[in-house]
Image 1 (cartoon, rainbow, N blue to C red):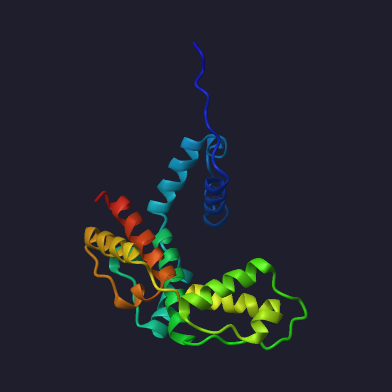
Image 2: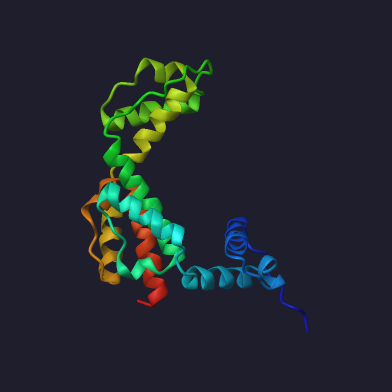
Length: 201
């Protein structure tokens, strides 16, 4: 009888498994790093069952002070969901606290790459803004311009629909602030989707 060949875990899956081992002091079976199925089961189990840390809860409280957003009760006890919640609320805090693009203070003698400039031009068209001269000349300014406008992009209608659909399945109302930016909305979809999977709904 020929032994069935096992697939190796993907690099992304391995990184996630190693992160769980490193930060949560878990001792895995050797198969976890060798077989895709064992690795996936290991990651899914710990993402579902690891509790929130004191640091996550503290950071959540500080973010709530900045944004007025508190995590739903269904999320608070789960490490994986709280990690993504805090990341999402960081994006919302950025949006609230940075209504306009700000220049880096330091002068940068490096020039932006052609790829950066093309992306800057695309974002400028999307937001109907002119590109400041320093953005065209200084790499750090161009990077800051790209970062700012990517972080305040609005979600697509398809993404908004996904956010509302998964929230309805999870029985949680979507805060309006979550839907202000594309990155925050994407995080919300990720959180709600995984919550539904964890609860089997």
